[in-house]
Image (cartoon, rainbow over all chains, first blue to last red; front, side, top):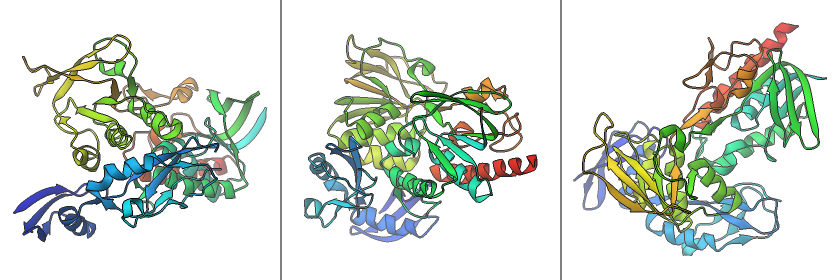
Length: 118
Length: 325
């Protein structure tokens, strides 16, 4: 079966044509760089996304502190993870890159701050 | 009146790159004005990833991308940073007036770089009929309310236009627990990048109506619903195609307009259609020694390209100052 997908690795957005047999990718066409093939395989066999959001700062210079997962998480767990992140409040100074929550939903993925906040 | 070699207005990605590059090209007396209380400009509210893929070969969020430039700016003592400083007047001899808390300053510069960015096009510019209730926001304002102020502007959202900021905000509202009921685009294809259609709209199953437009916004105090119609290839309404969507919030994401009122005040020639300076070369204006870079020169899709072109602006300004002797 041939499936058409758009690569989201970069703003070029290559139109990929993916040949799938028994839920496995056997051939990828249309990619302009090597990332396209990896993306196609991941997107078909185990789609994942980096999750970005913001958490509430309590008594800090920023009202909202931007955060991201340090690794991509499965697409179907995004909403659940976003719900967990909404519960987090930070009440201490943090640096960009610092971990503020570990092992989100047991996925072995950490939440890191993306902006310094004093 | 105070004197400076180079004054740069705006410390977003364009202004910061221009300041660093001017310093690296030999300018030693630089004033960088920023109206906000932080450096970084609009990047601070763009908390999603996708920045830096060409410039740094890394996938960064907006604040992370800004941080790399902020660190450099703070390390160069010849760049004087003035926050909460708002430029209000400019002459054709590069005399710039700005206000900051408790003071009105006037400064004569050898060269000026305007890196003032862009503002969002509004509902009035695209003629959306209906009432004027609460609940109608430009996409970038909603982004600021959620990501900076920690306020959720609505629960059931319809997005008009498919600009990148609107697409990004579809996902952002959903991640904050709101419902996005539709994205409505009058053209046959998305105005924003395909990757944003995929990861912000399709990923979450948001209905995306191409070749549709809003016929009317309803609501007395707060938005209650919108009427939507299909349009043909001439953008004319298709008969009997109307349907309604109940919602409490409407986001407008229909493009950006460069901010160039100050260079216009100084007498620079402006293209009225695009609100950009008319010039022979990138980053230049019709006034010698007055440069414009970033989204105020032209609207960019990618911040990476803004950084690249603004580095050139810093170099151009340094060359100009050197030429004055």
